[in-house]
Amino acid sequence: MYLVESKGGAIACMLLALFFLGTWPAIITLLERRGRLPQHTYLDYTMTNLLAAVIIALTFGQIGESTVERPNFFTQLSQENWPSVLFAMAGGVVLSLGNLSTQYAWAFVGLSVVQVISSSMTVVIGTTLNYFLDDKINRAEILFPGVGCFLVAVCLASAVHSSNAADDKAKLSSWSNENKTGTEAVLSSVPEEAIPNKVTKDLENGNGPVHKAKAGTATFLIELEKRRSIKVFGKSTFIGLALTFFAGVCFSLFSPAINLATNDQWHTLKEGVPKLVVYTAFFYFSLSCFVIALILNISFLYHPALGVPRSTFKAYLKDWNGRGWAFLAGLLCGFGNGLQFMGGQAAGYAAADAVQALPLVSTFWGVILFGEYRRSSRRTYVLLFSMLFMFIAAVGVLMASAGRRK
Image 1 (cartoon, rainbow, N blue to C red):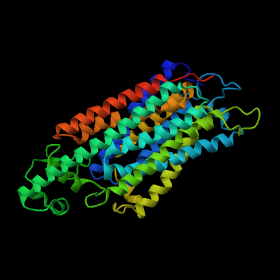
Image 2 (image 1 turned 45 degrees about the horizontal axis):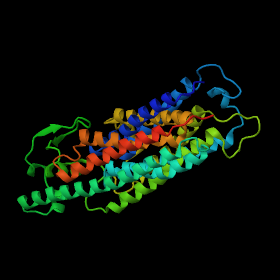
Image 3 (image 1 turned 60 degrees about the vertical axis):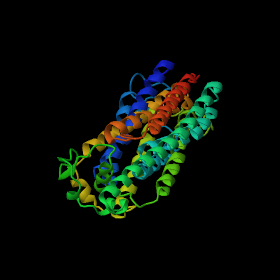
Image 4 (image 1 turned 90 degrees about the vertical axis):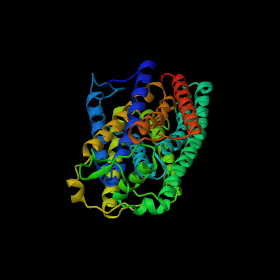
């Protein structure tokens, strides 16, 4: 079994995990904005998410000889380690619920805001729990100022969202005044031929014309609402915020659950039974995540939530538009979580929570893929750059607090 033991190796795992975990939400959001049903996307995503855990277990978990203290993956499958397995599976359950919630929350309040709030809750709650579970191996005088940087970034992110929302409202108001109609009516019923823009073929769906407006314009916002699978206009943002805070609580618990599964701080294992290695824990974690996602999303096919169109399992099997992207999202999330746990096992799970600076990556993709913050005010840009600076400071400080597990 291969274990990351150096501080440098742990930081490398965290940085790679940061990129992966910040990228997969952008892909899921992209598919929703192009009209793919979230139930279809999540079912595809969850299969490759489990596949990533299996690949990691069969490679890193089987490298080298199996010892009594560090058994390989297959060796541990037959050991009496069920208390630790249950901790790992509990972590998978809360992660699955959190990911499922954010998939809908992204549509209501935006990718950047959801990621900032949920990541910050994870850091404030989860990092504190991990600090004490890890027997304080991380340097508190460095770790908790890093948590403070996250909190400052949250305040800035809220200001960014408020400023950008005001910019968008002004754009729509200007558009509606020019066209002498209410914005609400425009977003809900304006005919496509009334919007004079170039027509292009949707690269993802490939099934019909999609107007290509310039990012950041009022017409762009109108076309987006007409095309997406989760209709949000006229609905309260409270729904999205409630889902976001619920997801934040879930995300703050899954890392401590893995910590308990791999280090047995509560001494639940029988004497002589080796602790669960990180690869075995991650396998059980991903397995329970897969089962919960499968049950809930098949149910949502026939009983959809939040006004999403109804579907069937047969329709899901036939829906290949965007399936490759959904598979990629699952792999990125799976490998990202695996790398986070590998780094956490070596340098402390509190320091590994530095990957919660993933809004840095998500914001980057939001600007590149979705045209977020295009044609916004100077105030919005100043707040945006300030937020990104604080996240960079936060991830640097949390990584600097990394210790070394004895």
